[in-house]
Image 1 (cartoon, rainbow, N blue to C red):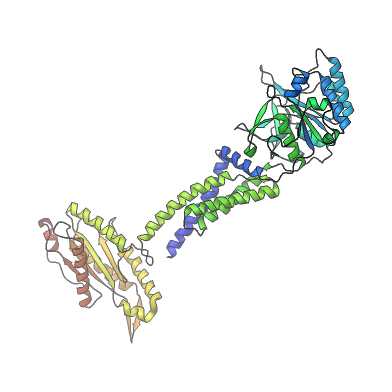
Image 2 (image 1 turned 120 degrees about the vertical axis):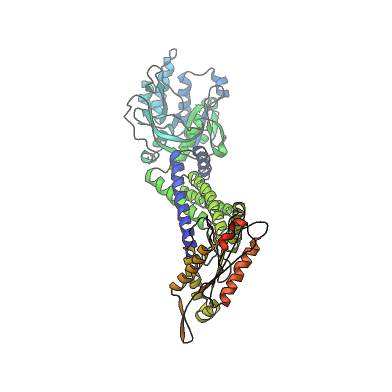
Length: 571
């Protein structure tokens, strides 16, 4: 039993270690990125979100295109927009529109727009990037100098599109060679007077400057929850605002995002989770601003935090899987996955850190399958083992006996069976109790098991104090078997298991009955077992602590000489 317990403990330790290592391997390989994205989307969507009440979107929509004509418009229209917003007492204004080139036909409009930007004082303009097709170098596309000098800030409008085409995060800083420009939403947040904690937030990228001016560099990546789908933010047509159709009370104190939503000219991006669908860039910037304002951004755990979190999650879940009280592996697997998912969600809610839970689930599934297989194998093995001695039991003996019978029948070879029985064991049990009796049985079992020499030899416990020994001999010889049986009798005496019987000190001894026959149509396994039992009975009647052998007279002619002159009892 102790050996079985040690084996179970070793298996459990192996499974725990396997779960942790597999989780680390899956996370490092990145194979589960698609599922990880989906799980992250679900977790981020559960974060509490305040309803956006101080953000509005002024849209370049179909109505505005019908009013002002083909896009792009004269900058005078944007100047009029800023004048209306200023009269209404609106807050910071962020344009998700690039104003990088001077108008060739309307320089007056450019001047009016620059003047309106300066007067407003809280305008954020967009910047982007452009790649030279000749050498692949990336340059920054900044607002026209007249606009840049008048504006309160410049923000990049780069979208962090993941491998599955979904925008679920943003880079707080980006730029050509060095990520020095804040995102449009972050730049707008700076104008709101809130302290910027974002300079140290997010996933870092350490190769900045190595490709100065050569490529577009992003830094400080964070995830953000969407406030909702269409209609999450108030959207007003730019034409209505310019014409004064929107009341000042609706715009007063609000942060305004200006961008294109008209289907014919807008660029749309896929969004995750419950908000899955196409969303314009200006709406996404509004969602980023809302998350930053509410401190609701989510960070992917990185470095040592990620490693430690992954180990803790996988170990906690594996403990549930390995030591759970449910007999069903499926139920324990479900519970383990729920525990790891719950812990990950708790960490997300409290700290805003997103731990990788899909690698843990993958590791749990593999570990559960292997653990179930190991358990089934262990149950099968244990079902064929005697719980006290660790030897094969009666059921396993019958199976092996049948296999050896058929093998020797094909080879027309003698099969020998020994029945070993402890002498006066009931008296020993009555005098010393069952605990001492169990120890004696285990000592005998260990001794007998150590006597086997060939692949087919097998020692089994077939009764209370009775053991069966099948011998697989390449060249069967009854004298050899008798000598082997006598070695058992003498060896048990040498174990020095003593007990007091009245005034006498006795040694625990055994009697052995042995029998042999050639399997075939003339014989059955039951005959061989009965012969060995009768031989044991004769050994007991002859005074115990001895060997008696019997054999069948029905045997092939080729083996007759093997039995000649045998049948003597061991003293």
